[in-house]
Image (cartoon, rainbow, N blue to C red; front, side, top):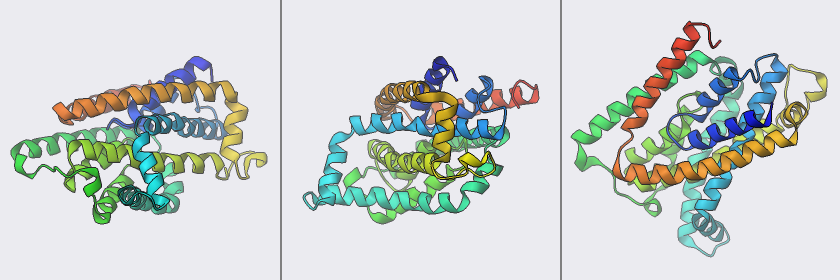
Length: 293
């Protein structure tokens, strides 16, 4: 991997991680187009680990933008901020379904769903869902939510967490499911988006740690140990590419987050529905014509 390729992947990760368009789907297609992770099973493991690890940049972006919320949660856990503790518990409850289901189904998901056609299907289907939800919202304006973040109950957080599990299907988008989930349980647009960002910090951190530290079966024996994914990525790409990818992801994610909050205050999710359908159609066409495998 050349540094410019790491930069492109970092920008893609940062822009798409918090927008409801699927960072995993975009990264899978971008890697294929650049010939990264396409030569062997070990090469694919290294590429997948890199794609997960540069999520650290997206995590840093949210921690920087929402540091006051994070500090309140830390103070709450320390017994000094009741509202911060309530929010921290809401984040934890929202994370638990993904933690359990992710461990149980991880291998099956990677074997069956990490392919171009499953991503194309998820892109198009998710786009149709967004358009349908937007149409329903326009017809039922009185049912739109208005609760703020600190109004959340553990039941609301659990519902959002269960919907987040749907995003384990690459191409679905974790942000899409959590934002829509927040709106469905009655949160305001701003609160739903903010909860999606904060829940993403915990979810992405866990996913990054798992991918980097987990055993890597089925390849050279020296990597069939703990830290296998991280060691394989390090040996394949070196520290420079990882650093470039993380920095690019941090900056682009911060810009994307600020833009998304501002945009959704004035508009709905509809534009993302059309985008998902369009990119799913284009990528599907590239597969049919043999440009992508």
